[in-house]
Image 1 (tube, rainbow over the protein chains, first blue to last red):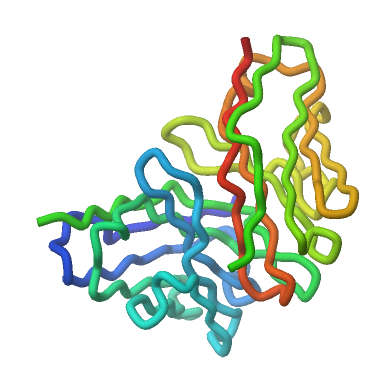
Image 2 (spheres, one colour):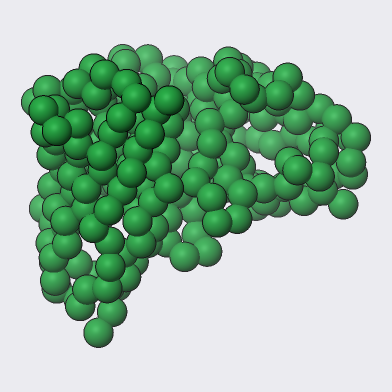
Length: 121
Length: 108
């Protein structure tokens, strides 16, 4: 059974930093792209970033470019999201998702339960 | 930036058919996928690559596409289908994931 477990969320002041982690199990982690998707309170889903199997390609939504960094450790079956210069608008539930990506399609076939990030003074 | 558009809400009576549309200029070139999200829960994939259904998803969920519009159809809607539904695709370059704004399905 595929399992994705996020951790690292919490309350942080504007301008602060936070590192999210996602521990994966139940599948060959190194064979899949991985993504982070967020959802602000009462709002819709927003893809944030993804990373290729070997970490050689990374993509970000425009609103987090230069502030967030996605990374992975295939030996630890984990993907991370380093979030710097946090803003109030980054407040959201952050989901880790297994990313089925190819030249013709990109979708998320498994999701974690999420970790809540609140940016407030 | 690229966008896909969904109606904010759809209402249907139990046993009827619900249709939720998603429109986007890149949809003729990029597959669309659909997620169901119930309050307080993570999203669940219900349709991928326009019309494929993951294992464990009831047969009453189906998907189709024509040109710049794709449609999620739920036949014989049940009370448990009340949820938010999100369309997702990629931009024309196939690089970036894009979600629609979501459609709240209300079962009357």
